[in-house]
Length: 443
Image 1 (cartoon, one colour):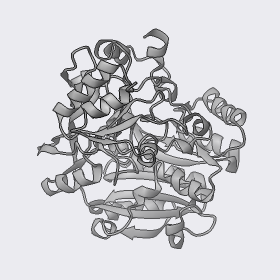
Image 2: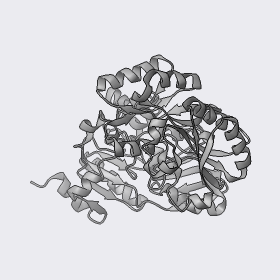
Image 3: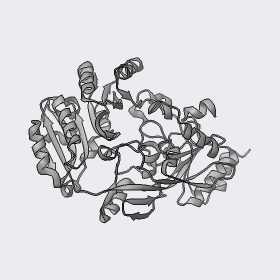
Image 4: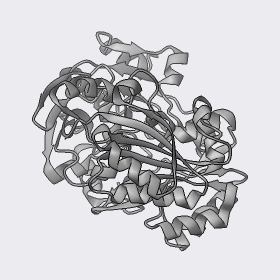
């Protein structure tokens, strides 16, 4: 008897289909292994096949086929997420968007792109016109714009523009639905929140309109401090310095600095460090700020110099976790909103090196605040949950990176707008099933 997968492969044979087990395993997974909780739950999950479309009409075909055979569809970008966002829990077709990589246009402050456009490649084009992406993750060199919108939240640039979910950071989307007759829908303005950061559970993103930021020549700088809280206060001071244009403020307690092997020449033993991106036009004012906070600049590259090697970005945000785990794979991490430096100091004193503080300063409701991607010395799931509960009971917000459930990882609320949209465009629940708690409970 012919299996549905033989039929599907035959019917879509004019498209690029991948069934090789090694490639299938690679393209079924992401960086879920950052979490010792997710690793055993997700390590064996695989799609039945991967398809790489190159145009909208092919995505419609794939959607029609999924509906015909009632098989799951999971959309994937570069697979640089950390929570299993694009890992298929129930098999099915993995739709790899990396060949949907056309930049349709770049105009004054706005661009229209396909989802598979790589972020660094986009910036290379946009900067020729004086623009760049507003924000990007530490996986910037390989991450896709569609993947970032579907599964990301913030990154470098969040010090100026907040997070992806903030109004205005995504202008419009075109998505393919999985209704009985798949169609293309355009969402604009606030309507984009139906799909923004929804893990591809309620629409295949095929085109995006994104606002841009003015491009600056970003100097990359390391500043070291004798005292961690002095480094944290410097980070807050730089964030609050409206006259100094910056793109990245990343603060690391001393145990973390030893994991940055390529930077050891610039990180004296037992010092705490700030990894920064600041406009070259503001370096004089910046040096005055460093002097005020008793810091020492050990590394400074102009934008031109920094473009020739690895960016400091690749030691910040969740690349910090990547570097640390390459040396000590027992480490894991948390994602925390501290809101104030008083809370940072409290948790720093409370947990010591069990929870090593890594701050990323971001803008929240117009105010610069410290957020954290702390490194945690993992012992047991119970202890990790104790640490999470203690943070939440003492006024910090935890976006739990140890769950693949959409609502449990972030704001911990049911998003009725996303649920109702899924009911409309994916009535059979075929899109990335098992990820949306609201659908599981109410679908």
